[in-house]
Length: 271
Image (cartoon, rainbow, N blue to C red; front, top):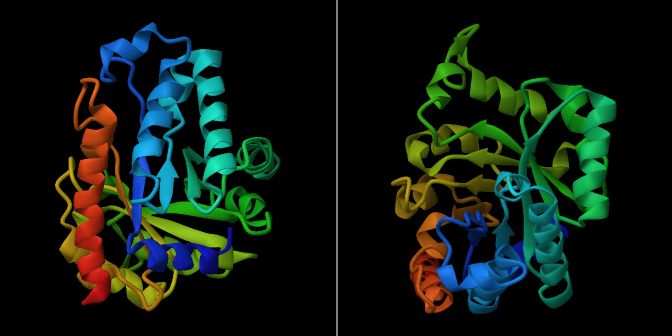
């Protein structure tokens, strides 16, 4: 999927909502545990109830890998279901991969070719040759960690190195990598005051923004400082939507929460 197609979906749906599919068997409705594949059935119900309200889904692969081969098979079934029934929706493998070149190539093949995700999250700590293999795939996107929403972000990301915060150096350096037009970036919503500086470095890149909802990020602040001319934002909510209820009405409850965010986004887009 191209960024132009993603932007078109945002305008069509009046939404830049991304829903995180982070499935914890301890939190999903108990009646689903009686089914052969409760993870997929949970995802399918959430997707069926919310696909018209969002433009992206983001499964965090840890929540599938934790359940071994059955979890991975559920992830595969989920992405196939999305690609078959809602090919217009942007898909993100939240895997945070990153390793030396030949290993990164294999990670990229796993998510872009085998599973057919539109994008994957990566960690930039190992530098250029760990990220460029992902960028080599046409019409696929590499979403690089820039400034995250967790407290530990201050351990390294905001430290001054040669008079400049490390996350800014990461942003500036990545712009010079081959196929950098395929880069997007993760910027946490709980760091809203940083968005203005980030937009000075990458004015048009898409930003995946976790932290709205359960982590306390503010949608209006993120939009005020982070929105670009082409919107350029994917606001992710995971727990706040998918675990709105653990009863049989869970999918409808998720849709209600998603609709609330979508309506707030529509107001922003039309203002």
